[in-house]
Image 1 (cartoon, helix red, strand yellow):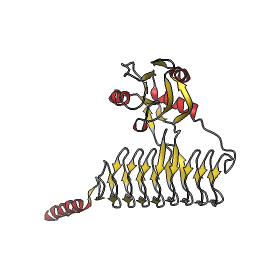
Image 2: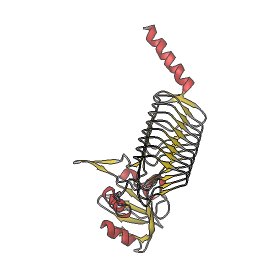
Image 3: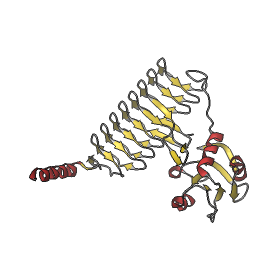
Image 4: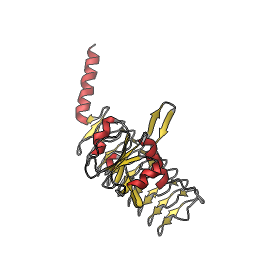
Length: 305
């Protein structure tokens, strides 16, 4: 998330009531999660296991719960609870905005686009030309939809990320200030759910076709000309490269990459990154022919008993 204007380190520290290490006028341009940070961003870290990764990331401001040596060219924000204060910044820069109409006055809808009755279009949504949005679709604030996109009934774009911190009193939610971006020539089936990024974008790239009842988690990027069949669940922060085919009821863990032109057969479970250009099956998923041989050998062993 880029801020509407540059802020200083002192201004940010004042918003969250934190101490800081660095020049008071150190420039702060935005905030992001570790996997998408860039220079000028704030990243938060609250566990020693990830201190080094955060301190040496591309982020130049680190919101951290311990006073540590500040890397050269960077600044620190010292907080007793970085998770809480990251949420404070999300509320400050991206507060919830109440809807005042079924289609928000600030929404921009392109030429020859049809929005069927019962669809909700939130604040600052942009929809391109020649789209067809069927009934009872919900398009939350700030979503961006390209040209020639079809979205079938009941699909929801831009719900919050499923991201929680466990505390003694219960689960604390990491608030979502990101977007969903749907590029040109994408088809989305009925009852799909695509969550917004926490601070960045969940992106479906051009030419991809998604069947009914598919879930895509926060900050995931689906490449160009992919096919995803029904009841597939894709967790957050996944990268699916171009021309990947995913058949029905596939489940996928977070933070992995699926290589270009990979094919994943139905009901497979993906627990780690997969190389492109191969066909996979099973749980844990492996190259399909090898998996079938393994299953056949196991069956023979059982029959021998």
